[in-house]
Length: 424
Image 1: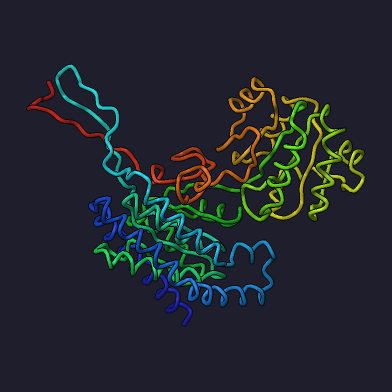
Image 2: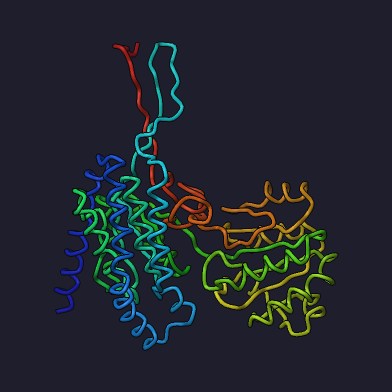
């Protein structure tokens, strides 16, 4: 019975992948107006069926509570009216963006008269493996549709009702606009063997993007026969420089840690220049403690903030995804950058300073997918950076670095225009 069930799952997943490959050919031919019409119908469908989506989501929330999911995980899982509106708004932002497909860049003429250029084309079929957040279903689909790709979505079992419901609305919108519904497909099998089959479908899927915890991403990267965009964790830092605007810095740090602690762009480590620490740290700690943040600090932090617990070596590289913050007092900006090089995850780093030259040095020398000056780490997000909805954040540099929007879901092919040239 177990063998038959596994075989059935394998065959079902393979069918979904083959159908997506066939749909990708149709999507690559679709013009911008038809893709935008489908996207508009998707946004309208999400808004119009919000109550049904919340009903389906409640099934997942109740099951999640019964399984003992953490508060952070349940927060990621929940679909509220505001989050449904945000999904629809994100799709409409994608509609407003220029269609990248077919764009020709950098044309140049060779001595033999051949005109050479590069044209932007879809990647093909994108496989997304993700946990908890149902909004990924809509975000990923919108970007893939606009960029002329097909997408195969495999969400976590904890969100199966939510993901299936969202996908149904999106597929209906595609069909209503004469585009292949299989351009947006959800693998409904929650068995882990479905992921293994998906990762072996190299003839159908062109790129895998895992979104979730470090364990999921490492597992996907180890098993996949398909190229993987990786983002292991978000150990994000803010460095408060000696001449920072302290009231502004307190506000930014509280936002970066507290506004939504269970996400990858929340601040996990606060670095404070030793000249700023005596004035800044007690004020910042008071606001953070007031909001329930547990502070784990270096000896100087514990001296200045008696409520802080001593930090261990493990704390400096930890992505808490919770109301816990590591704090270290550093002797200089160089020491702060050395700390980031050692413990960072190439995700998001920020400096709070009034010194332009130091800010620009930090921007140049810190290696991260987004480096900010005087702003919260919470802005490392495709929607916030003006890309429309994002499909994920890459920390691996190849083939993309940072939030992945429309252009990051395309590649470039060479095109050449001649007049009978032959090679001698």
